[in-house]
Length: 295
Image: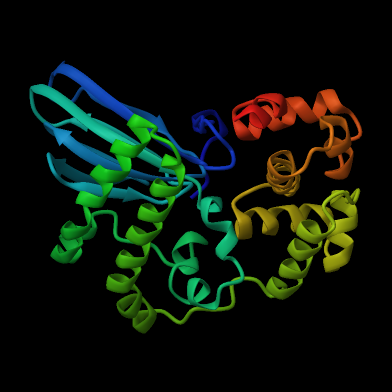
């Protein structure tokens, strides 16, 4: 369905390198029919873990009643809103994640077969997984571990969160892929998928190359508008965002492993202006290049 732009929520994810965030929602002394989650949509997946109370979440107009201990998965791009179903406290955790968190698996054939169809939107997990398959509830304690890591932010918590969340998606795909594959013929998602992969390899291997959207689109034989639309569907990021992240990842590695100056590293990763490089690095890594070098 077409989602009104005014309802789009630019959900803030702290670090673009690890686009995942947890939001704790508490509505004390809610009355039945009170709104506990305003109507909006965003491009990220959202997992809602109900902690207390009883509410109903409408996802693309379909109602899903949820009680404490239950989990729902909201696909990216879906309009959703929530209301209390009875008087009392309502609390729930929202785990928001962009599919681009798992971009490094794009070339992995096992990922492409089992997990990518869900990440790319060709297949969808049921909104209430455990209602469709009770065995899914066995995976929910993993969400507690993920949320605990996001809250406590112990050293390298991002890696723990990423690995556990990916494990969760793999386990869910084990449960639902065979059924959905049997019921639905999956057409090739991108006719130009291999050429997109070649472009991604070019970006990653020629890190300082000046590559415009027009140049990238020309490599695939597409007009820039269609190219940008398909690139974001494949990677979960805009072309410019993907290039910037790739460059900042390389800069992070060079800051850690080399003694070159920040200005030199800035030039190597394709940023001719060191001040802009510093701003960009902080945006993606949560600290300045100088701070990164001290850690």
